[in-house]
Amino acid sequence: MAYTSSSLHLHKHLLLPKTNPSSSYSRPPPPSFVAAAAKINGVNGHSSKKSPNGKAQINGDGKKGVNGSGRKKAAAQHINGNDRIHLSVSTGGAGGQDGFGLRVAFQGAPGAYSEFAAKTALPGCDTVPCRAFADALAAVDGGAVDRAILPVESTMEGTALRNYDLLLRHDLVMVQEINLFVHYCLLAMPGVRAAEVRRVISHPMALAHCGRALARLGVDREPVEDTAGAVEMLRSNRMLDTAAIASPRAADLYGLDVLAHGLQDESWNVTRFLLLSKPPSPVTLPMDADAKTSMVVAHRGGSMMVVLKVLSAFSSRNINLTKLEVINNNDGGGGGAAGHPVMILDTSARGAPTLRAFPHVLYVDCEGASHDPRVLDAIKEIERFAVFVRVLGSYAADSNVYDLQ
Image (cartoon, rainbow, N blue to C red):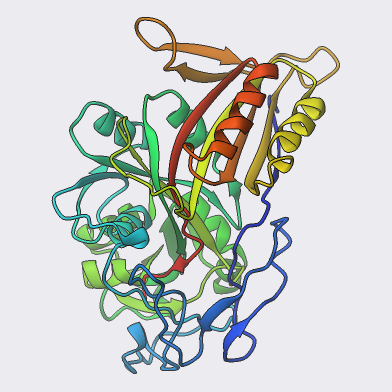
């Protein structure tokens, strides 16, 4: 492989699946993270405590069924035997933001997880479906929409490097983050029973995430462009021998039956999304805000030495990192063919912004806004030994995990 990637997720706030109802607890994170566990309120218990911004954190009301209403379909089942996590999302945008009047581009068809993440982050926003992630970025870059939303990492897949590569090619800034619990369901046309399903369609990643469940069901798998697109195809063609993997909200949107809940092989499946805007950032952060700053640091070799210097720049100022990812693009050793370099738009270049190629980059997220004097000093120190540094944005830190239920 041309790319080799390793990542450290430091001081990452996580919520783990239920063991017993509790209003507050702390447990180690899943092995896919190097992280500090966090104390979370109201996990699957009876607490409905809301975060200061008015958005409910992950919590439940102890009820079974869809959306905690007590309704339950007889045909629905839990394929993997995982405890279903009942979560609630109140009105009011994540991070206290209001989406009325904003247009947000997302990849996929209506009902995609990205669309629900956008509507959770910015309640009241108008969403614009796009065929590809590049189209969503081009839409905001060209002024057709106000924001674009991209999934960038997940607990099951790690970092979606392709999306980071895409955003680095555009003069856009990160303005918000949101973590979404991804709950996979098996959806079919009304009246179709699970025993009648011979084929399952969905996004390749969704099929991979549900591999064990699909193997037990003994069905054929067919990848399509996205989860909501699979549901749209199922409905428009009235496929009676086919089911789709998608969200419970997609079932409501397209009028389909939920044959099974919790198809994912791992019960804890969270995806982090970033919302992007044209600069300057439309979001103003107070000096004392709980914020994050994201940046990319490019260098031409000596990865470990650069990593240690970056760590020193932040640790000496008592700044926590929430993400540090190392991307090395080399010849693979032994004289193999070199891979493609990482292309970064240099927005500080004189005249028009210029795309520059770098063989090695670090993705860094740190606590604090870019106007914080400590963060500013750390960036200046890094600029003295790095080939190139670009701040990708500062935004309100949101460690909550939101759900579609």
